[in-house]
Length: 220
Image (cartoon, rainbow, N blue to C red; front, side):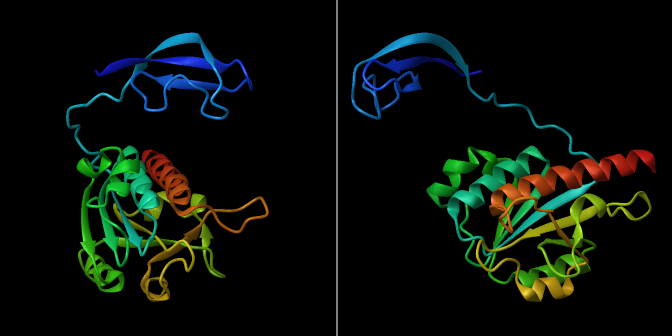
């Protein structure tokens, strides 16, 4: 495990409290006002360890399809969440940036090496092939006929192979995909906004989908 240390520093001028990792670029001057700071605490920082490959859960085969996600940061964040929720593959479609982009790698934090990925120009054509290969296509989108994702899994009809589709930050999931998707699910919203950031939405949906599926699998 790679370990280093960090300090909690407090500015003597403006009172800003912030962490300073060893060898971090901006140094000991306050990043807000450039005032003098003092260290109030030193702590060991544990970096994420490199783990051995683990056997994949055979009960479910989850994959994600990014349909024209334009932000490299969102793409990288989705890859990182995909790793955490044991999604086996990420299909990067249309204008979605790939891990060849340094901004994707910046937010993926190595997940691009543990989640298999492939780039495709046309998501609709890809989905037709995936359906032929036995995958159910679940589109994450709010429509007049969509269902809350937490109620989508039932023990009697839980599919093993699922591709969860997330769409463009502005236009959403391609209408051509919605027409051929097996299910359209949404995240219920409680506040004033109508949608979550796509990377956040994927992480929430992935957690609900996986937990609901495995709960249904155990009941079944």
